[in-house]
Image (cartoon, rainbow, N blue to C red):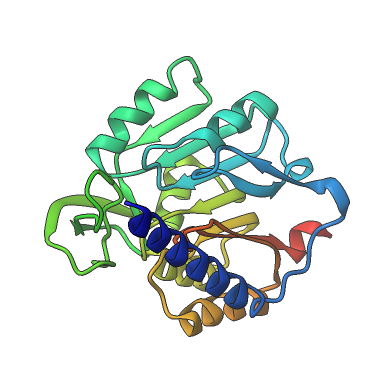
Length: 241
């Protein structure tokens, strides 16, 4: 038992050290002072410029899993309109219960992608997890098929001409969604992206470079102790002006 505990501590320390080394390969330019606020729990929390959001803000939150603490904090502190998307039945059942009594949080049983289609979602790598992947992130068996929508298609349906906050936690689909958002020049004020792991650092760097060329400033990188949660926050320079 003692040896097992030491092995786990050694692995955890090694992962944390590797994460710290890799983290600083991304250039972070924070927003002014206390403007950045961590909203939500440890797993589902995101650092955002809270003052950029008002009760009239429009938020699209892609990926629910088993944590809508961000939605609940936004409901409590801002009261803005939110659309949350996830095709996984277990996530939807959880979200409908957790969001009860919050009419500003709309739950949609679809995934988000670069186009409107039907995709196969592959099973999580870890037993008990409910994060299925449309890009087979972990090389696992197919789980189910589900409809997916593009951001532009959703905005047309809901009558939105801009997004004040777009959060992507999409199990590897974030790259396709980001390409779509940039290609269509979707007006986004704050962009929160989880770069799902495992992923090659050069793939993440390429996505970050593309966002920076499109005038998005990386203002925060938050990586949990396991190294699996890479939460990044970007702010549109155009929206800041």
